[in-house]
Image (cartoon, rainbow, N blue to C red):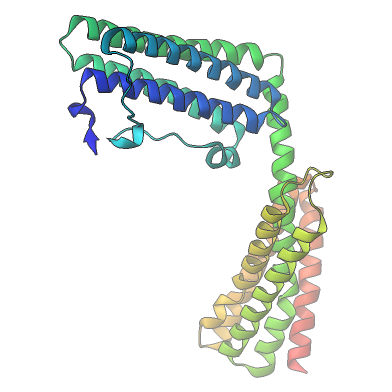
Length: 318
């Protein structure tokens, strides 16, 4: 693998051509992936992909004029220290604004590449060529900003943000909340029943782990099979099932782990404190994302959790 300092002017230009090709395809991937849910941002990336195509054609014309018809096959991943492009699936879960920031970073990286390349050559023609490419990338960044202003004006950015928030709630928060509530509440009775029936911390821990994992698997499959997400807009069933199952396990394990403490009284006190924290977390999520009044959310969750906890203690003590 070569370092950037070892490249000749011919190789630098070949690398620029392949980089422009890759960036154009990345922008097209962004556009296609965002077209359904973020049409205005998708159009922005279609415009940027078209600009990259123009840059690529100009680069090829310049290369042929100076070095001939054969363009060496050199890619970013062949050069030490070059920046690798992130793909849409890596960026979109963090929000569409993160995708826009990645595009801006791509343009800045390209301009810096040409600036560094120009600083390495003493050939006047090559230096002029690389300087022109640097200015082209900087102009591309300015054009992208103008295109973003054009396509995302008049409240369109806010509308896309609201749409993204709704999808996040439907696809992540709701199944996660269902799982957390089931894991936190439904496992209370078996864990505390086992604890008070045996007064053995490890027995309670085993029951809690079994109940948590079993509930997580059950809830995960139930959520995944309940709705394919096409009509409801709730997203892929596999993601929802994974989130629901994982949060179910997390909710049950939270008040199970204290029973790794051998002292039964200490373990039970800590487990009870964890239960209160879990129930408050559920109430906060309902208030934050479901617009449930905080007092009503806390009251309902605490009442339900308290009843299940009391049932487990009474059954275990019988």
